[in-house]
Length: 257
Image (cartoon, rainbow, N blue to C red):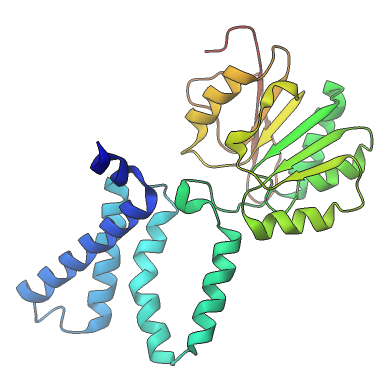
């Protein structure tokens, strides 16, 4: 049970994928030395094998380019003689931005201005009094919404320190905006009229269960770009922005699927 629990953790899966890639590269160098005598070819072979292992272990898709480019990036940095202080600075910056991804959170995705405008219309149509943005990032939705509706109580939940700090700074003069540096999974959804999330396909089943369990009948859940599997949306709003964003709107009923 302990071993199974460890394997379920994303950092452990990432390490296993990288180790598999190293083993595959070593095997290729031994079996086909005439083709894999150059270190760069081995590095990309290792990355490809690690990315394939990551997919086989059902890691989120954004892990795959990380695995693919990790070892080539290390070799490139070594060849450029990058100062060691720069490694530390980059590591600290990435840790502040992607704080929760090692624990299974979603990386930073930014919503377009069109999303904020559409949500403003939704909040107006719903006559919402309380709105929450789960995984608010740098406040690209929460801040303009709070500015547009001074009487709307807006909450922005973001665990990563740097995006949280940016949102808090942007909304420092907005009395109706509360910025929480906490995981979205800790948020009680029962008091909100509109709940918004822009995450990824991976957490949508779990988030859907949380929405079904906590949101009250008549309230509205809006997911940007990623539907809840098995749910029928009340409306699907195509925004026509560069990303081709679709907002999936789910009306909460007494008995959700």
